[in-house]
Length: 363
Ligand SMILES: Cc1cc2nc3c(=O)[nH]c(=O)nc-3n(C[C@H](O)[C@H](O)[C@H](O)COP(=O)(O)O)c2cc1C
Ligand SMILES: CC(C)CC(=O)C(=O)O
Image (cartoon, rainbow, N blue to C red):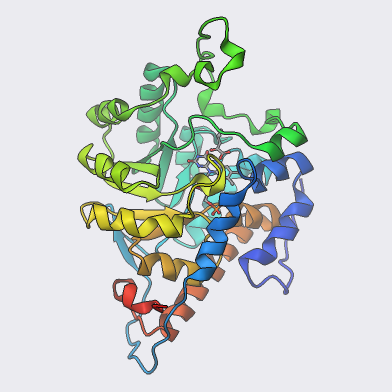
């Protein structure tokens, strides 16, 4: 796959990358990346809900010393923006996750490597030039899962992001396109994992009996994971304040309010709408991150104002990756950061700590 070395001058926002990416990604893979669950109501709502929130500008504020830095898990980050775990990045670029990591490092941005990455944790760790976290899908084989966690830790992952909202999913766009993971995007870290055991004769008739679901993770597994993990454990895919409470009680180091970019259960609330209740319940005991529909610096600003410590982006950096490789990823991050800075100046917030509910318009 060859990649445009020059980014057209018309590309000035994240959305401008989407058509460029679409032209470079195979049609079925595009349906996989762009699509959401069922009727995609949640996919659309993630965006619509952000657009309903309004910022209250403030003028003539002293911006001396302004910055976008945040403290999280013992590190200072240049921006409150992270790259969400996205599977199979070789669908977008021949160098996949390694190319993404280059772009992330150029912008000093934290990246989360998916369990379903097309590169081994060892090779990724050797080439990563900045801090990264490992996203874990707890596999039906817990011994395999434990070994994978230990490999990721040995390779340099500084945290485990356990995704809890996707034991199953139903995506009609993917089904219609009959999309299957191509060999070149193989999730190499799962090599050697035996197929989940089948259960009973009605196996094909019920999702409840689907291979592996009986062995899907529970709260007990979070405890189990914490018993041997050497790095902090974060849960990704929390929408309910009650689940956030259980997560804090389970001793996690953070939660990510996420509906998986509208890709798992359709008709659940937008994450920006779910965020405030989770923030209220967590009450500062652990950091709360969020993702889903972040496309503008103003979206980052709104999430911070509603109590998020940081946000993640998913699809937009994959667009940058497909369009222009590491440079595209870095450019996407640079645009988003610049937009956040503009919002901070015009809302009179010189630091991330100053971005509070007071910065939003109350209807
Ligand atoms: C193509 C694709 C693959 C994804 N793969 C994973 C994954 O392997 N693990 C995971 O926890 N989340 C995965 N996600 C969800 C993202 O981490 C994130 O929650 C979501 O993309 C955020 O929404 P956004 O795309 O609107 O920014 C994936 C999302 C997309 C679009
Ligand atoms: C279902 C996984 C294999 C990947 C994922 O999380 C996703 O496609 O959203």
